[in-house]
Amino acid sequence: MIIGFLGTGVITEAIIRGLYDAAHYEGTILVSKRSEERSHRLSETYPNVRVVDQNQELAEQSDWIVVSVLPEQVSEVLSELSIRQDQKVVSLAAGVSLDELRAAAAPATDVVRVIPMPPIEHGLGPVALCPPDDATQALFHSIGTCVAVSDENQFNLFGAASALMADFYDQVSVVTLWMNAKGLDLPTAASYTTALYHALADLTVRQSPETLHTMSADCQTPGGLNAQFLSRRNRVGANQSLIDGLEDILNRLESATD
Image 1 (tube, rainbow, N blue to C red):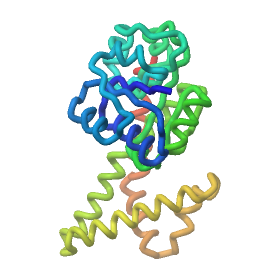
Image 2 (image 1 turned 60 degrees about the vertical axis):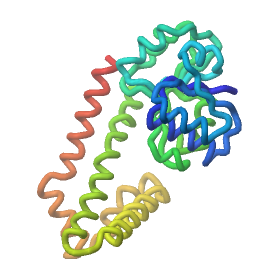
Image 3 (image 1 turned 90 degrees about the horizontal axis):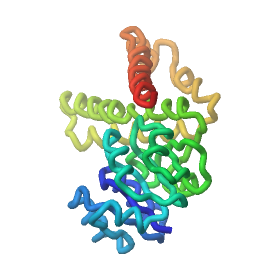
């Protein structure tokens, strides 16, 4: 099977590195010349990656076409290609609905949307998929945790949650820099903070869905440090701010696919 990537951005690179390094993928991958430095780097690193000059040439040689361009570019890029009915089209573009994709990719009807996250470079993290598709799930499950839904409104919930990435990294940075400002050298502060967040996140994936909701209470004792910190966060509306932010992103995604 030959997979062709239209657009060679950060997520494309993460997928390719995850496939070859974490999943030991042996198939051929084509990348467009767009982002020439990145595509050249990938072709030098992986013998099975080839750079293709023209999008149409890439489409003609691929069994799967992965659309990794900006959302506003999707329709134009796809409509310029002669896509075969037997090809699979996988879109990474946020907010571009299945109906829009099928219209632009006609006569192909095997169209799916996915939301990969950068940690898949290391075989970690969620990959949201809509609609469920065995072949696509098998590919992405080799580099992450594939979660599939058939309803695009539910798929948008995954899209909204994916916007937490920058906030998460910002928290890690703020805590690290706070300790550094208090006199702790930066490498030591970073070592502790990153290990803390990594360990806490790791604990969550080991829980059942039901016990996730008790983990916060279980680590609090009356008058303890965790209880004090969480109480202050709740007083200033941190949780409501989180929900409000998610609602804003969800509204944006839903309006884009209306």
